[in-house]
Amino acid sequence: MLHMLLCLTFHVCMADKTSFNSSARGLAYLHHDCSPTIVHRDIKSSNILLDENFVPRVSDFGLAKLLDDEDSHVTTVVAGTFGYLAPEYLHSGRATAKSDVYSFGVLLMELVTGKRPTDSSFVPERSEYRRLGTSPMNERLRGNQLGVVLDKRCSDADFETVELVVEITARCTDANPDERPTMLEQELMTSAYLTEFYDSH
Image 1 (cartoon, rainbow, N blue to C red):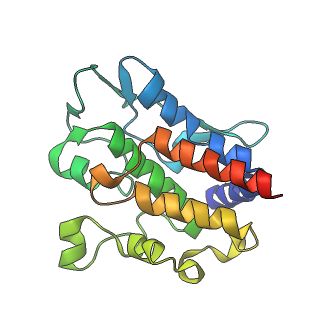
Image 2: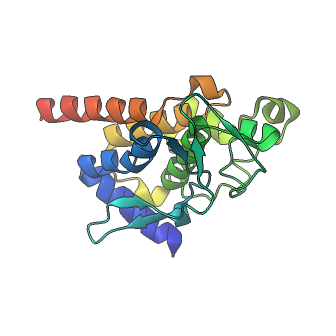
Image 3: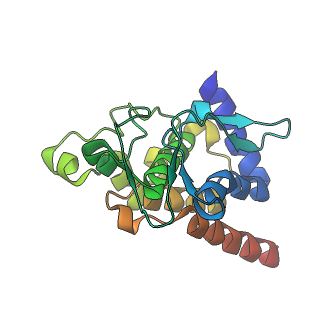
């Protein structure tokens, strides 16, 4: 049932590209507009609620932490949901805005693939994947293997937008947090795409 709703949301977001861009604004607000910065620490599909227009809203701030302006991270007992946790947070307990970015990427990956984060496609199996914190699914996304990863129930969505989602997903789930975009950068990248899309149509 949950995936059916997620897939429906995916279709709505693909049809209304401004809706897709709005899905990240909640996190961008927490990371860039709040003072102190708020790290959510539990971004997952069940914590994204849909309003009457199927616009995603971030919910459940029970695990959220505040970052002082001079701090880039907060060290804490690891909390959150397995499958969505950034590898560096899982190993060190250092929660940052980039930890939320990783979780957001996993959420997008779930939308695109129709698979849960605990699926074997996501979980590192070989030692080099485990060492790098990179999943086979991320490797497929980076290799642009859409035919392999895309959920067949969502295959009739706008191809250019799917490519954009896949690109953002791969970047957000990069094993190196320094290589992940900020939520603001992700929003700007999507906005630039939207401008180009509307100018060309």
